[in-house]
Length: 318
Image (cartoon, rainbow, N blue to C red; front, side, top):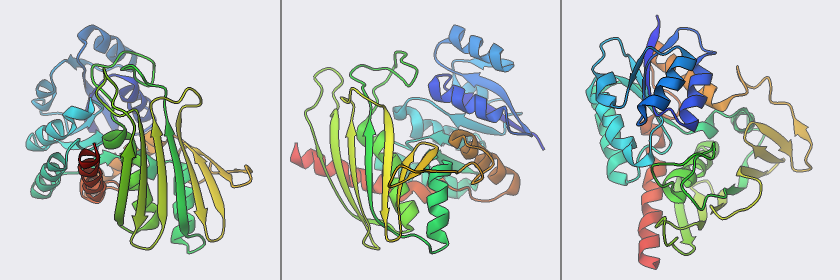
């Protein structure tokens, strides 16, 4: 069985998915969608993709397309995911699932109705560093007392991970905080029951807060402190400190260290060291096996309920 895929969004993350898919047997990207046709053709030529378009609807109309991966602007995610499900296509949408609670609710409801595989790109669930910690928790060898997380970028203009101009505005709450809110509940195997947030000044041009602080508490008593900034002129990315009852772990993307900065070998944790590739492997395996994937839209829905609550709190405090 070959799964034929359409990929929407030929930017920084779209290319990461294309690279990951090249390592996976039984999958072929047959259509590439992005807003700039000439640039999209360049990417398609590099990866041997025959069909190129600027409209998602063109790819959804292709009978041979089995599944879609959406790497498009945040504001399009819910609407495009719904379009894929209505077209009878399995879909993986990059994080976040939506930028509103209603958008997330609509997607979860339609997925349940169709029974199709619908998954959200909560990559932290798949990074080998975080999988290692999850395995320790599952084995009863480690329990989280606190997570301390820093998500820092230097992004005072609309640029992507490659430093290229973006057509949309990124968001600390609905995009970057979603990674940690979901990961915290997932690793604790316990829903978030308390959440607080404060934010810094709104940027005069971008119209978003450039700094934010979030506190979370899980039903099992574990807590999480999350600091986010687009103003950090230094190392970029997200760094996780797991403080537990038997150890402390520092996770930096796919690398993991003890609390004393001793490197832990996570090369044997999963089939690959590439979190995006592992995420895609799960998506395609779920399609082939007819099962719910890890990070299904239903599984991550609670995260968006928490984000909605935080958004309402920030509006009141503004």
